[in-house]
Image (cartoon, rainbow, N blue to C red; front, side, top):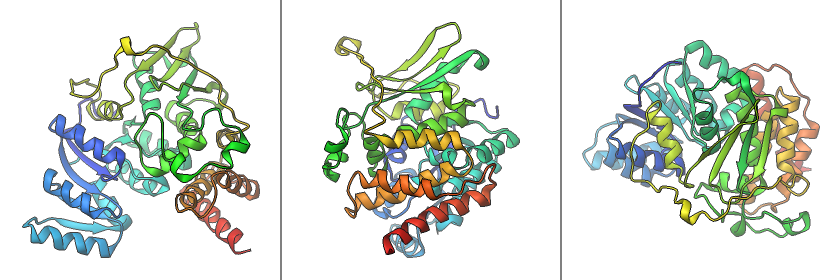
Length: 389
């Protein structure tokens, strides 16, 4: 383990997204200094964040956005560097003063900057699950080599992390990831064919960005979490279980060899696991919502329907095959979800695209970083070629 004190200076990748904006609330609550921020295209919100938190540098997606934001900030009398692209993100995470980097960008875009932050010996508050889904062995190898803590921000992995604290990991029998089931719990395949974008974006419990909300509706989000859990907690696929828990009160559980089960409970408020990642190993008082057991009348569980929601099965299959198959799974899902959000395909076309791409991929075992990047590129190009046929 690397740092045993709470975050004092924080860099955020993806500051204008759902996790990023809530992380800034946590930072304000606990007087955590913001050193640097990155966003993709929402320069209106980023401008407000700069004025509120006064970071030393920021980065955006492209040069045009960078020039516009630089102009706005200069007009407001604020002098700081506005960078862009991958190099900008690398400078955001590598800023010397930051002791922790929160990675909350969407998709594989977070991989290279996260590795850069690890090389700079920053503690990682990880909210970008695709980093470990696509390159778990590589990233965890860098973390061990650089003696860097990776603290999960996802509520499920945060729950497992907390349940394991002070326990012997060799005595873990299995971990149990809970899932809300999304907005279409109980639907069959025929009903899912008629799902609209507007319906899919209405998650019953959590407020999240569009991509992760759609992933929750297909159960791919849970599948990605299964793969992430394998690397975070060094678990075999057979020792990772998924249970649907509609109330989203128990965020996940750990079963030990003696039959004891430890569960972490809390309100469905992402600021709580974000705060844990930023203040670890301490727990700090806050003004966030607390769980009221007198209003929690029932906690129910059921097995997921993997016949109707095949994305979860795809994830387990990709994890078992290993190599570059999880990379291809993730890339195909990213492209398909984007098409669905843009109303270019139907909901169940997401499943069909992923199935097709995975079936055509020639898996590379024990991939290096270049193999991972190439597999991601191949999957995206393959989908484009499919469309052109």
